[in-house]
Length: 231
Image (cartoon, rainbow, N blue to C red; front, top):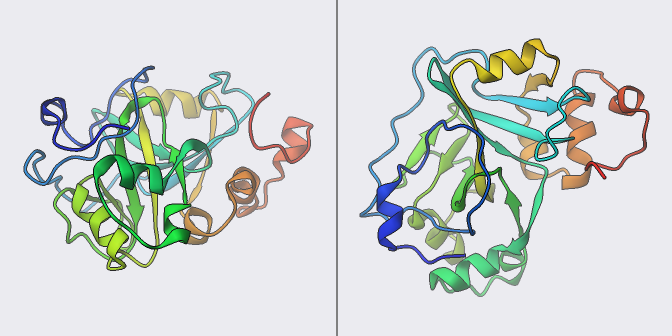
């Protein structure tokens, strides 16, 4: 985890579609001075934005096997999303400590930080409700947002943050046409976003719960039990 304010943070936009890649060290949030504000979604977003992707057996990439991803942005240049069922080895308390943010809320400090994907794994992404009044925010929908700036973490630590929020390190990126191609290859199942799944359902139950929201039993597809991650 790297504290904010590092010069390297200013050389990368907070959120952008990008090809899948490996490497990096968690976690850096864009400083208030460093990142330009991310514009809101277009008035007519594509059907894949604000959807959940559920990995199917045809998706052989171990980085995404049995994953659930929230598609935050999608256009002709590609797509960006965040995995929402993979725990990282860090807690929010670790992030606060490395960023020099104080919080006396032990429950909040103990919250597991998600492993959001292999792109920019050193960057922090907060999925939350409650509006876009932060320094660097992308509106996924009129009720769901992704923020990458330090101010939201400071608000959370002081008890003034969004009602519902989860922090992830890294994101997932697809190049132009890549996600569409993977959908034709039956790599992903798409379902509507469910706030309860994002903020309340245990991580190890999200893969099956997401599919179950449209009546699909993934245990019959995979021929296995309730384990959420590939062995």
